[in-house]
Length: 184
Image (cartoon, rainbow, N blue to C red; front, side, top):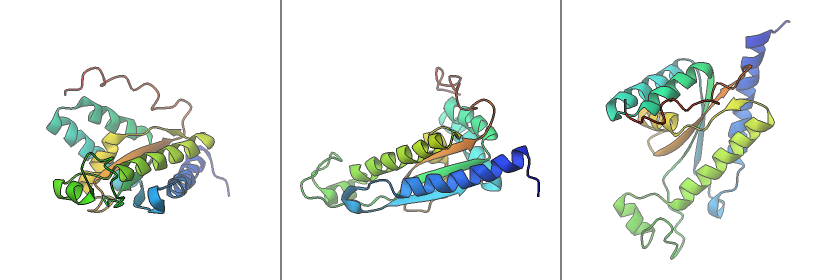
């Protein structure tokens, strides 16, 4: 068997995506409670993700969503990491800005530990990507689109995406276009 260029690299990206999900899963979690949800997106689902990002750009007038959707043209695989919205019920915590978990739940707030744990998991995943020399970028834009599409399930209101690429030049390096003018 002979596997050349794009086929070999695509296989490597698939394996890397799986390893990123493992790194995210094994990242430390508050009170040892794991609310992380992971997914790997490619093909038709990735095209749907890009289409939703472009819709958000127009709907909300935010050029960075369209810019990032264009960046995904260079990423055959996208890793999604999200968190379910479940408080840890730590007495007198208050990190979320509410008096207690019940008040936070009633107000529709989010447990600070959920988002903190998600951030640690994302950091662990992109650290693994760096170890593997995989071009990547953390995108809240693609994460928001994935949440709107329900890719991670109805219990996941917060997500980030990590597009993966293997090219001679990192396609996510110069992303300044669209940041200066946030409106479409």
